Image (cartoon, rainbow, N blue to C red):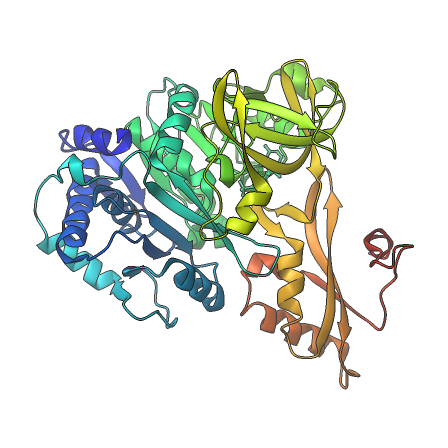
Length: 506
Ligand code: AMP
């Protein structure tokens, strides 16, 4: 597999830096050694080929465990610390892993047969298993899954999206040219949590090009001073993130070319790129270009890429999501599945070998979203994105979702996921979550809540209680910022809750 071969190749240069994590450096030689050690451990102690679940957030051990799993012919399931215990338990019960790596403490219950490996045990494995290079015959095969990412699911249970080696290799052949830029230093951001697919750009493309991954973790992001100090020291040349993260950085006027003099490219993915951000970056980084990409986890990270020109920035239309990658076909269809005319809005379907094989253990959901079709005379997989889009010339434009899925600060959220978890909170009989928009994007979430009984005591106390109970069931970013307690909900002529009416009340 290309990325594993490249790590071994770069490891020959003793000093080549693979990852910078706070003030520590891991070289490619160490990355090779630690991933070999973990693979050796898995091969010697494992009984099956079940995926390895890795819980944590950007720790130095995370990447060697991921590549080690691949070398031992297993997929990995990265679970970020934003997942509360309840969700982590759901992932564990869906995957039934033989090995569960906990780089952060968690007292979550595990299934019978699952062995926990904490960070000290992982460090010990890195030291004591020194088997040398792992025979590539053990590595994941093209049809084997490399990772499974769990995204928000409308039923209130996250759904797993497995992506296999062939999917990633197919993406790499089309995406690497966009990442292979000339720069005096080759340092790429390592900011996106590994449980979010955009991190694949750094983990697979960045590493296979021998770049240094510069880690920006949650602790750095929590204090602006340490974030800016980190950026100042980074010497980044290639920026990969959601637009939201760049917006956060841009809150300081010092986020400019002086702070990052070697920056050559911003590559964005995951949510709407606004005119405002494009204008700001063009002004503050006149020597860096901006690439917008688009794609769902189900179609292996991204399926478009386009350089955002000054002309596009000045255009009245939204910033385009770009042109499909060479091997990708787009179809925009109406509600009956028939192609619409150019310029008309419809649902975007992606037809490509980048499209995965469905949801993990969920044939019912797979059947609804995935299909088989012919493209340019060849049998291909297709995916119904649920994204409303239109085409203008070679470019495609995103105009929002056709369902209740939204993006908030880059996080993919099904509003029904929050609603279904809110009703598990004591005294909540019904909840309706409404995204509040600002400048083309979701600004925050508000929830209208019906109680099962009269609230005694102050409303604020009740709201605080609902929020803290909900935070035990869903990640923090899914807890609505505003909660409105109400005694009834408006309905439309179909008898359904009138979400538009509720949105007007905010
Ligand atoms: P995820 O699976 O988390 O990558 O989320 C995929 C969804 O994010 C897509 O179906 C879109 O709704 C949205 N999305 C991804 N990239 C973009 C983009 N460049 N512009 C607008 N929305 C995007």
